[in-house]
Length: 494
Image (cartoon, rainbow, N blue to C red; front, side, top):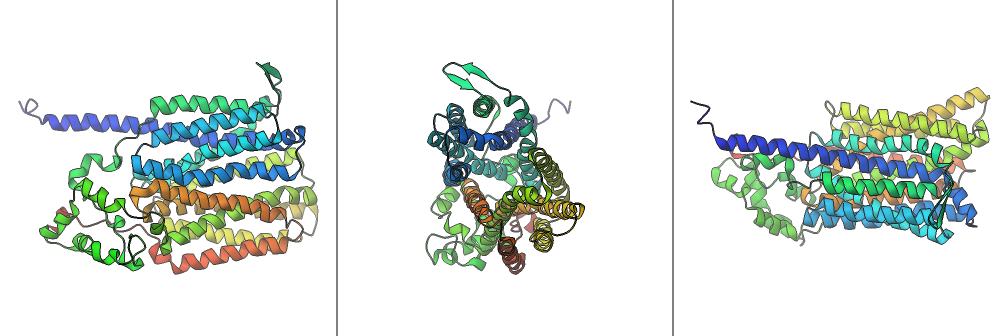
């Protein structure tokens, strides 16, 4: 008899939860494939782009332009796509549009009628890369703070997996030689049409398998029991008025809500249960750029810049250094990058495991420590290499190993922390700014390293200086680099 009188609402909630979980899994699969393809695209195009340009009578400096073109438009489009997804909540629409740019850009790369057309193709494809900001914003809104590092680590690991398997596709692409309508497919243009097809397939996956879901999917089923206004969304008095539109509004408009989260009286707790439309109206006028000028956020953005600047600078240095002192050729370089990719992939998985018992800032501190050790090692042993071939090889491998080891710890932890200390309602735009900072670093890093391959003490000394700077900033702001405490609910105060 009790079964007949069971609450039908409970059954409906259970079914709804199962449906939401299924949709979330499908969406996560699509996101994984998007990151995978971004890695494959880089690994497929990079090995042959210089030879492709040579067939089009391009000068050597043109290679730098083409390689930087993708990062340039990606850093410009990232905040725009992120802001769009924040305002509309339609990440799916953003990805569909960005994929169109990827498809068009790679088709233009396949056509390759001139060196300028090839440059334009990477500019167009880079616009599509800006959707990564919206995807990170989506992942932030649809994961709890505890899940943040594992989620981001898996996403970054998918891209790393693409970098690993990308060279395998070149094995058969290099033998392509056939006619496709008016276009001739060869080993130089084949990567373009290959990626065009893959991005088209992803487009269909996004259409049929990607679901935007509720704005707060992780809390949708318990919405009645949780406060609508998080303490992390309230501008902190520690930072003055950086999150408000007017200089004095921080202390005049929000203290009532901040005090409410600490008060034990039912009257004060009523302030936490504001209507959604009231919250949207209150935060609609907050300037997202001003909100990123807090001390902790500036430190994390600086860590993003330093990490990618040093990484790309060392990547640029590795090949000429290995050729000069170790006589490495294409095969040895490919093997080296493959082993580095394996190490980095393992690193992301280790970070995912450590996140269960270590805080974000502790993982970031460990990554910075390894980075400093790596840079010191390179200054001592690689700035002016001496000794036998075996000794040089060992010193070179250890230096590269330490640099690659640090990257997953620094990159994942700072992205996770960044998502926790910034406002949840502007995550897409926030990650767009973060990725733009990284984009600037990936442009400047290779330019810095390329001009100082014969003056390694200066090159590595500046990199060491940047690491010391971010370490000092990190130490001074350590107490702020933590997820804001959750507000006190009625259940806890009663």
